[in-house]
Length: 99
Length: 137
Image (cartoon, rainbow over all chains, first blue to last red; front, top):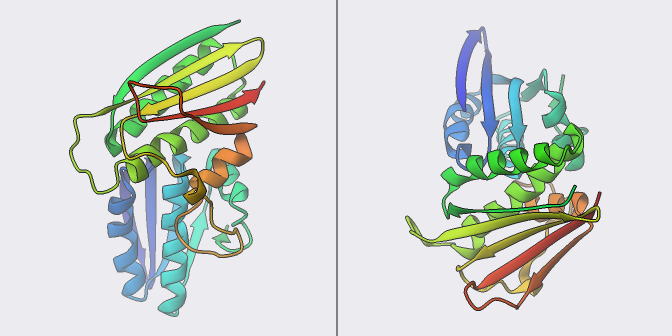
């Protein structure tokens, strides 16, 4: 997994790339959670994420919940078809902010 | 087309990508359509992840290997997982309730959603745990 972050005002956009599994979840959390804890609105762009397993889904849930605690939000954007299928399998499409 | 292939992987999170590569290669040989192929790869990866995460919980840098065997015979797909970790207590395996939104506990749910059956066999002397996932395709 690789990533890129862009900043615009209070919005941080994290572009994730590659496959997100248990091997990279700590790295993903290290990138996303500090932004959320800093009160940023975080946009996760997943257009280049080709695979996500339950560990990756856990990162999305944890980020979403941490954002609620910090009175901000995480928006999941441009979800690839394969990742959307996993999100829907977990019945999270109504819980996560998908755009 | 009937086929049976197996491969050993070091029990480590870094092996999960290799598990997916191996699975995709086998399913491509079997000409399984892409959507189903990716679902099956997810189920296999989740089961392999459970070995690393649960059967080897608290064990770091083991030299142990797990084995994954994918077989197709008469449209019955069978995927075997063999490991030498802690014995699985089947009563303890349960996924979280989907409306209890929290990180974790989804891997087993995904496996059950994708596969027809998941059974632990006690038929191995060489291995400790032997899980068989099966699906009619």
